[in-house]
Length: 136
Image (tube, rainbow, N blue to C red):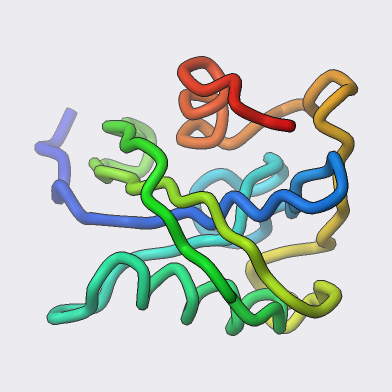
């Protein structure tokens, strides 16, 4: 096995609204076919909350109104040779999600937090859900 590249810093936007959380089915990069929150890699000099708002807008068209740090996970993608530290954020956002990057997400859905999570979940999202039970 070759050495891992990273760690890189990524973010996720956990958008909760009316008892549901926004999830997307991933395409393209590592994790294709899995469900996850909007998010992505931080740019140099960018604050985490700025990255969350930018990624959310780029991927879904939603506008972040409030962004609060939630927790972080350490995520190794051995098959891709990558290591990410993912900073998860709880987000209040306005608007309705649209697929704006069809090469990265097949769809965005509001998933009820009172039902089982869809499978399979993207690694960082699954680790977040294992550690945090604060959904309304």
